[in-house]
Length: 159
Image: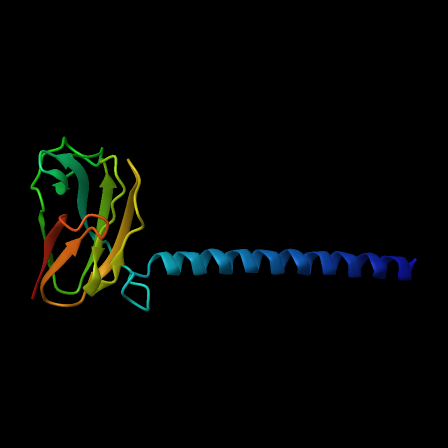
């Protein structure tokens, strides 16, 4: 009887060990994914903080496709198609910045700022992508669409 009880305890302990290892691996994986999502595209370490959000839409204007700045009202989406064509994005130095790009044109477009390693994928009609970076260089930099070179704008990073 004692031998039978000992075998049952060993099974119970090995099953418990497998469950604990599985839980530890799952928590470690979730933690790693959370840290990687907090790492801006131009940094090697996570940056914990709330980014400054800038919204850019690609629309089909009278002169062809163009970048347009857009704002939200109460966090419920873009407010109309108003805004400035080829907007200037102004941020502070060492600020965490998120740029949210929405393509409302029927052609593919992308958004790039080479100095900060910001490069979105090619966005189809109504495709969107958000990209976060640290504005760690002061100055005036250009952003552009590599698929349509006439589409460009400026990002000003203050001191």
